[in-house]
Image 1 (tube, one colour):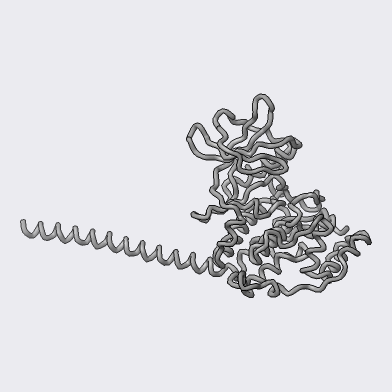
Image 2 (image 1 turned 45 degrees about the vertical axis):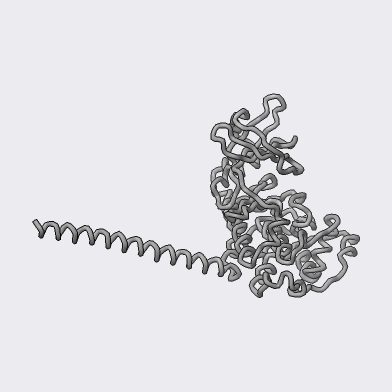
Length: 364
């Protein structure tokens, strides 16, 4: 297979001190488990159980992620990733690391985020809401990518959003990895329905663009009202489902470009498919979410060739997000007008006080 190097942020980690990405040698600073109490279980995954908790020192809610037995290197990698991304836009904050004294099982303590299940949330989204939601995820991804980190598990389940405040948070960085050019990575990452083609064909020299394809899958599902837009029974069938929409001509060009050879049995499963028109998925239920800008951005995310995909930063500049910027500009103008009014009011008050003093002096 022909190797490739990310077109953006490829040397971020090599330009920094070795300690930045050398997670295997970090020393874990343990907090005190007795400072926290568990309230109720709120989630579970392959690698952890998640609980709503309470910090007994400040009485604030928190989230406690109790890890299941995994390699110590994986735990250290997640800690290092979260430490490096701390304070980044829309990224969950690792507040503490504690350990059970009897079992030695480690737990991560995170800031609490109010969340509504995506299956309940998505049907309520307006066109503006969808644009805002995708933009906020892109902000988190661009921050991570610019800091040399791939998430590798973008899916609706890992995006928390408070329906009242619209605060969005990207969670679960357990599969995240530091990007180094020419390094081969494990292809057994990401959830099946959100895997990029590179994972499905066993291409190990992937990069940040994997997150963009996963986000494209989420975006398509959100727009066309499907939990999983590409839903395969297994990894091979997952690529079949993608090929049935994106066509096989571009897939063949992708395989040829990177010298990727698929088993004959796999090729026979994929067969031949022409590319489908995205507008064929428009219905009266979702048409209010679709425009030419919508489809253009979606197409640029869902490219077979990872080097041809739009980057997170480029996507944020796409005209699809213009309404967000127009609203922000309007808010800034209104804020500026209010500030001018307040300033004028203060000036008038000062002027009134001076005139009052002058009148009193004349009366004397």
